[in-house]
Length: 434
Ligand SMILES: [Ca+2]
Ligand SMILES: [Ca+2]
Ligand SMILES: [Ca+2]
Ligand SMILES: [Ca+2]
Image (cartoon, rainbow, N blue to C red):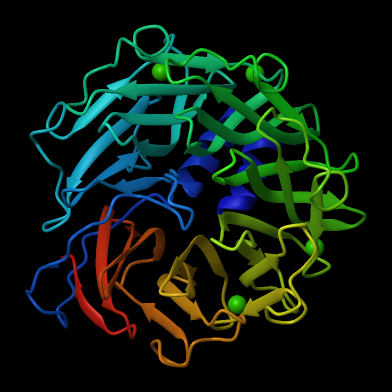
């Protein structure tokens, strides 16, 4: 299950399906797994703060802080009856809950007694943490103080909600250079779904200088669409990526907005671009703006067969496909006769890293700037890591000096587990958590 597909399921079916989708997209977790083959050595790595290639902060299901800890949004227990936001903090050396945070490492937040699902988390420069997702079919955000307490200076008692008019769910969050908070996801009514964005001022109030009372929805030619990722450039322009239905199948869909929330006419067709990879479902899960203004979207394609493959598209700043990248701007990577899905992309040292899952394993691929696989990384550009459980997938990725840190879930019938693996720059496993 890819993040993108789960977003669609979440949007098009009822609440139960949204819970399921969040659980699946949440890359829910895990089993008790022992990596006998790996060393006892713990990761000795400094964790950079969470920044994308433009230097701006972006959020994800989990983010690293500056002290080697990880904030995780959402409930990792698939059998849990909890329908509140959950924020937890983990230590990265042991990958155990940090009991000095909140209530034994966790903080639960209910909105109005209804069903609330956290999908993304971001850490502000001042150490405050925002968790976002869905509450009663509306966009919902909570901001916490660094110790896990509610930030009373944000919204009402730390909580903010926004109704986009349908079943609305946040799938991405970022903070712009002006300190404003942008969230994106999908809004659906009946069988129709659109990109949906909201921008908030730093105090949680809707930014009336953005769209209509802070809100924007965007259609792609009338077909269903949903956003899964966003990035903000230094000028405050917002790039949002996900999937949209065009003619017969889903394609990558990317939109760029000016700082006031209007579609940027200097990008694609009236601010929108769709890129088809296959006759079946294709969708983007992550997006990055390079320092030269080019845009990379990563996700999945149904490819030639019945199994999914990694898919990347790179665009020039005007939204045209970048012909110097891969096959006229597109790259597809098959790991195996299995579902290979990208959850996160990262640029480090001028190279592009994509990470997610392949079948039941962690999967990473590294590409040169021209989109060819970087043969100095792992096995001809690809690395997989099998924890022995039934379903593993990377959902957070960090460069740390000459190391690459992959964080994900390992899921088994026995339970759930967060797994942190450290690789060298060449894709050689240094350590992985027990
Ligand atoms: Ca609740
Ligand atoms: Ca709503
Ligand atoms: Ca397609
Ligand atoms: Ca495949």
